Length: 339
Image: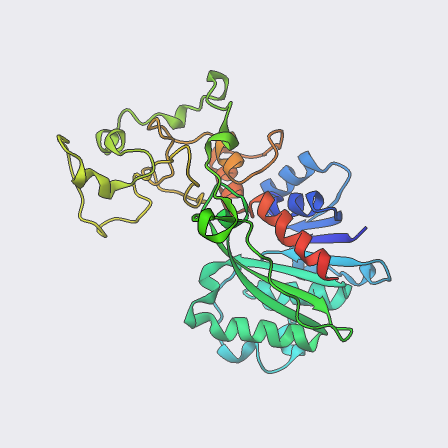
């Protein structure tokens, strides 16, 4: 069995995925208090560090046992473009803004057989090119062959369109660069020979019961209550201008964020679950209410009995920031297969 260390674990989406992929999670790290309490509520036997990763040492994990490090560091701006590229020592130096360097410092400390790095798709924006190139250059200097893969969660059976970047790193030992994981699902399965994208209905089934009611879900009053009630399932504010017989405000296409008044369709994947959505930002349930905690957790494919600790706002942030568990499972399983 492969041992696994989770960095920047948050609510544990990637760690749950690792466990489901057959890895033995031996340690998790996070700085957020509520996230750590969530991890402890679900993994009472696990070593969980509530600490700034920069203060931790991972050299104790060196050894012959196959080991992986997984995690998705927050990607914060860098003040110096050259910070990453000059040398490994400068890269792994203490810089509170640079959590990507702390990820690689942990890799250098623990010397795992492989690692899985996760981040937002915007990491691939041209303005961040030097960050990605330097990460790959430094990982190579540390002894890892890497493959960068841009994934949409929906293409791996998750009922959510959520774009993420993964970097698979494997100890060289003469091996070639690891292949990228192949999608298993498609929006056009008849053309691609894959399974169809998953709709949200079966993932949130049962949570419509009254016992799951949340006062904050009610949308019958408020600035855009009438508009929301008029939006068809699977559509957003743009649909209002196209409805026959509709009487109410309409909005110019492009005049609002695309997730404004966005509703779920039961047979389609959700849009991305946000960590800090505005009051009229979707996805909303197709019955015109806000989603409940177990519903957003279900769309993120957390186990149905998973516990979350903190205020409603904190829980939304934890779930929204998480890697969908089934996506984590697919990515970690692929990494393990390359070791």
